[in-house]
Length: 365
Ligand code: UD1
Image 1 (cartoon, protein in one colour):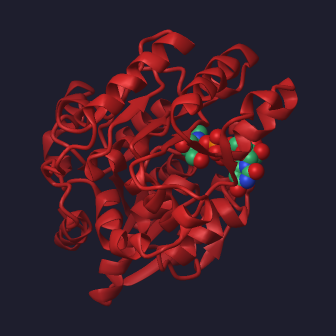
Image 2 (cartoon, protein in one colour; image 1 turned 180 degrees about the horizontal axis):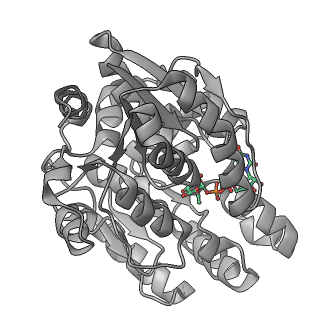
């Protein structure tokens, strides 16, 4: 059995790594494809290093472009590779453009190549069709033969869309495999000292959703709120390239005063920073999950979340919508007052999701 894994953007790497490790342990023939959606040292290479991911067999090097161009370039480059490798499974993870591009190519070549498609992190829904990730998720699930869900709430979403139940397999959250494996290593790192932070006495924010950062008005609300929070407690903002570009375009650099702004961090430094934080503000999907697993209060700067289990069973909450600086400050202070929780396990967030995934692939389920 040959398994082809596709990775492309930062949030893919911590999902691919544990699956790859189990495949390698079991000496299963693997092909790793990196689309190059993310390509900077900080957005890609650092993650390969931190997570011990081997060099890809194929690097498509597509880089940044409009959604259509980026997706089309990935599809064009991926098609001949899939034909050549003819794996039994094409495994795609998450909800980025690389995920959909690979699934679409594989679906059209299924008969010719004899492959099937497995989607890791299936069934999450924000029900917000304006989000490119929602489009990617829904379409990838529709194209897939085997849908690995990270939490029980994903099943009804898929059934409601007419996906046959026998294709759906609950395996738990593979990102938490990476977290559990790497937390002891991350804790030995020196990022807190480097940034002169004291455990439990700082906050972390991440901001990169187009809906929050592309337009000036939204960006100003978000950054002003962070500025007000930083008057209460030191606040670290690892700055995503999209956000950095928008700050420059909109001339709002002065709103970063008072914040500890750093370049995007590698996996281990980010994990260590989250683990030591008193509270976190984010619009990322993965960080909602990581903070829940770590027991750190999290405020999500979005209208809704495709990961409701992080609210019902984790440490997450949504900021009042539409976002205002008063609303964000208020919910952040409440989150801080609540403090850390014990890290009760969400079902299947136990560090063994990748084993269950490989088992199901091997069974040809
Ligand atoms: C993508 C994903 C998003 C994910 C995010 C994590 C889609 C539709 N979106 O959004 O779901 O949460 O990654 O980071 O797939 N850039 C660099 N260096 C890089 C990569 C990007 O400077 O290595 C800059 C480029 O200017 C690019 C911009 O960031 O135009 C946005 O990158 P892109 O991959 O298009 O989208 P993200 O916002 O990163």
